[in-house]
Length: 357
Image (cartoon, rainbow, N blue to C red; front, side):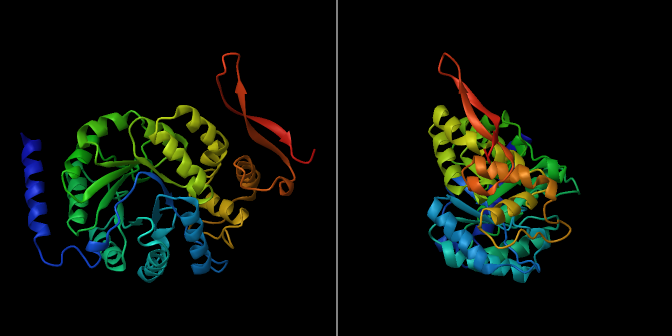
């Protein structure tokens, strides 16, 4: 009974909000719907001096357009949004809008602790032309479930479609499936990025929210399994350096083609693991720089460039995925080889290979 009354309140509140002239922002009639598939949580390239490298960013966006990335996620954790000013955010958004608006949906991270700042960033995203907002659960302060519901529905009232983001490992608060379902009653709460790592949640959440609500995995290593269990795609760090492969992987998972999923995902497993040997986005910026996609691996403080002891791990993963030339490794690597038993079944394992031999 209480749940029913709360749902009714939310629907009435939403209807009243949407009747306010101008409440939907300046690009409401130009929104491109979020898609199933691979969404790249794109890095924000920087120069060695720490300034945003707009030419490299434009090159990255062209790379994703050419590679079939399904959605572009800017200004998330991977994009170092927490250390960018509002003016710098505007640079990133306007560059993305100029390059990809109308060609792929632009999902903009607008989440933080303070709801006033979330509103400010979301309104900026609306005014500059983004298609949806990615809003994380407020971290550190541990809001109760009713506080989380109000937080997300208040952002949704601004008029931009909202993808809620649940990552309790970083935020120390968990948006429950039941709270997700309540938020999903709001017409602008259109999806969830789930980075809990709990694949058993997919079926339960889907049963509560229906088929039209988008469920994205926030974990590259289990994203294909997430989709095979009923998800719609992933918001991926690996896609920064392997966008075509991640698109193909998500399409195979959506088709429930287990053999093709295994074939595509095998060479990517090293990336799924080694792009997280240090805090994101430290390793992926190194990987993108090593692959020639950006001019510097610089990360703004309090992050730093990757520790040299991890260079080999990341470079081997790039090589295994076919993203780094054989000749320039110069050390013993491990590459994925699929072992097959007498029944024709098998899985990917890593075996040593002296690349100088």
